[in-house]
Length: 167
Image (cartoon, rainbow, N blue to C red; front, side, top):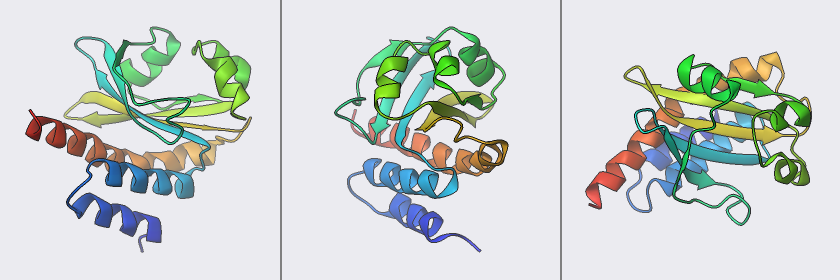
């Protein structure tokens, strides 16, 4: 049986108008239900140009949807973009080792992160970025995050479709 948030996500994707924002908001609710999240962002990935772009943020005043930025070339990119595995950091020290904005992250009450790679046709096309309090992303929650990959892919593909139609 599918959860109410999963059913709402499916309905939001099918609904016309204000896309992909409706789907993104429904995905956030599904993420909250599945693994828990305080700060949630969605980033696209261009593996050829080594660029990413934030397309959704539940805290746009702090993490706005913005232009592209170069990849974070650390062991984070090796795990998430090259090995195509979920990156997990459960302390602010682990986060600081890979993200320059660790002080801002901590100021938001977040000290753990999972970055879930979204893979389509063998390529990482983006990541779901989930942040919460210290130690929040247990092995069980990381395993549960696997269920977010397909809804994440749907949102990324919807984003591409809307972007292509607006050209």
